[in-house]
Amino acid sequence: MRRRILQSTLLVVTITALVLGGPLAITTWQLVKDLTTAELTGRLEVVATRLGSPDASIDVPGVELAVPPGGRLLLLRDGQPTQAVGSTSVGEDPVFAFLPFGPGGVLRLEEPRSIMRTQQLQVTFIVLLLVVLSVSTGAVVATVTARRLAEPLSDVADRAARLGAGDFRSAPGRHGIPELDRVSDVLDTSAAALADLVQRERELVGDVSHQLRSRLTALQLRLDELATHPDPSARREAMAALEQTEKLTAVLDELLDAARAARAAGAEVADLREGLTAVAEEWRPALKAEGRSLKLRVPDGLLARVTPTRIREAVGALVDNAIQHGGGTVTLSARSTETSILVEVADSGAGVPEELVPHVFDRGVSVGSSTGLGLALARALVEADGGRLELSRARPAMFTIFLPAARADDVVSAPRPARTSPR
Image (cartoon, rainbow, N blue to C red):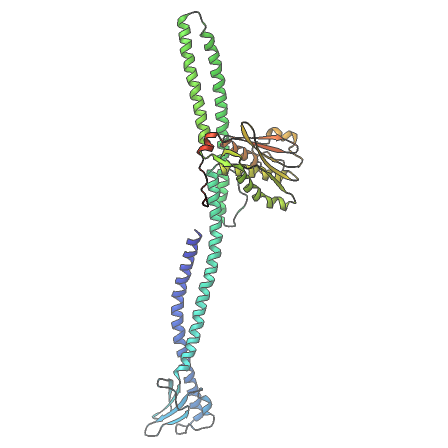
């Protein structure tokens, strides 16, 4: 995009310079010739005034001062020899001007054409230099404009890509370009609306699945009792109904599994050390500006099934929360358990107030002037990969992400990195 903007701007500047520079150079060339002729005519008028009488000779003192350097003044009269003052050689094709002087007389002032040609070349060179300078200035302006437009557009495109990947965090930064800032505002609004929609969808699925399971369990218990009824026909009907109930339960489980798999469609086996190291490097400058530090404790070979962009954004939201509301050193660590991978973000601040502990992940809940969206969106990102985010310690605060560990078949089927050197 930057290249296209730069090329388009440079093309317009170049065409404009050629359209204006060419005619300007030709006009300047002709203007120098006209000015030279006008100057010679003016000198002739001075000479005519100095001579006065039409019968006078051009040997009058002071007339030679009106002759330009290298030039020649001629007085031509019918039937009389030509009188000359100045240089004897002005070239084969001199620049000249003439003025009638008395009956049958003409004053002619000549100048070597090389003098005018030198002036024409100098002035034309200046014009062309100005054209080149204009193109160079246009190139600089085009480069700055292309960068000013391309970088915000790339940023907006990256934000849209993150939004599609499930990162619903808003971006407070703006670019100073009204149209692009409007797009950023729309993306923020869309992100908030999608986050609400996804959260309500998850809550609805959870509530519906819980209610259905409860009702199906109660129904199975009643059918189990009917299956012991002394009437054989009642037992057969109870067993058939119980079989259908079990099938319905299996269908419900499959639908819930399919929904979870669709949410985690982008999940892959990833080494958490690489992703968490990138998060640490991203947020260290912000902590350093606050006079704080970040410690990273992540062992090698810690594999989890995650979407890399989601986990990075979720952990980044937790670190940002620690910067905004915590204190002291921020510790980012990861470890494995028998069933899952744990990622922990902790700080040494005052922690979460007691009254906010049950609502810390609710949207709009914040102890400061922030929007209260960061933790809610972090939980949504983690849950999208089938994980879980909890406040494991309130004071000082520590948040724990529970991620599904990589299965044995995932590790076996994962592509091996290509060798970069021969054995």
